[in-house]
Amino acid sequence: MSNQTPISEVTLVGFPGTPEYFDSSISTIMFLVYIISLVANGSVVLLVVFSVHLHQPMYLIIANLSASDLLFDTVTLPKIIAKYWFGAARMPFRACLFQMFCVHCFGTVDSYLLLLMAVDRYVAICHPLRYAAIVNIRMILLACGLCWVVLAPSTIIVITARISQIVLCDRDKINTLFCTHTAISALSCTDVSSLRAVAFTSALVVLLACLALIIISYILIIREISRHSSRSENWAKAFYTCTTHLLVISLYYVPRIFVYIVTNTPLLKIQNEINVLLLCLYSFVPHLASPIIYFLRTKEITETLRKVLRKKVRSFPPLNY
Image (cartoon, rainbow, N blue to C red; front, side):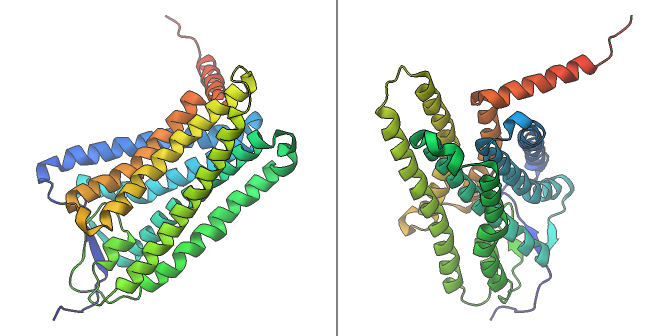
């Protein structure tokens, strides 16, 4: 029988099977990823918060999405960097549980915010005359607060409380980049299949329900746009905005759905190393790409950034030779 002595610490493995001489390279890449995410997402949040003309429903949702991505990266990346840079792979089990809660909570917040973004675009395009009456700053702030405080935590807190009570064996290795429900439940000495099923079903319901509603809203948007002349500048702008949002939504959902299908289909089992790489890609790449997409394809945010940079350049004193 396995040793059922309670463990107080766990060890992050990171990328399984990676030779030690790659540690410095991996930590450097992860450090650059975190710095880029910090600058890009932080810039979006600060621009929206401190630029009064960006206090509009769509930009408030974008700022919340960037804040969620930034918090996700802050909870996960510094520990990965410390593991490879300084060999600090150990972490208290309670800290692992907290990281797991944050990881799944922020991922759930992203799903709800993307749905809210789709609803905002649906009302703006399909019911433009009623947009100001239906969608306003107060309503968006309330909806975003509901996602942060009620919807996302209530989905995760019960699962976190249940997994905190499992009996752990002498296994203490988290075979991935950060603590997740699947990685922690793999350390259990007892049968946790029912707990895994509940967690998987809950995640899948949130993911697919939000995605289904997003797809329906954009089908209605595309149908509405197709009814009008393509020469109309306003409708061309609306279509341009929607393609930006669809690109961001694809970055978030397509890799996640692929991983869910692969990891839960017996005939499509993949090696743990590839699974961890996919986890890294679908967790961090969207956080880097989405703010860059907003800067490149959202005129108001781009113009605001340019004005801020011009003011900063003009504020520097001239060089006297």
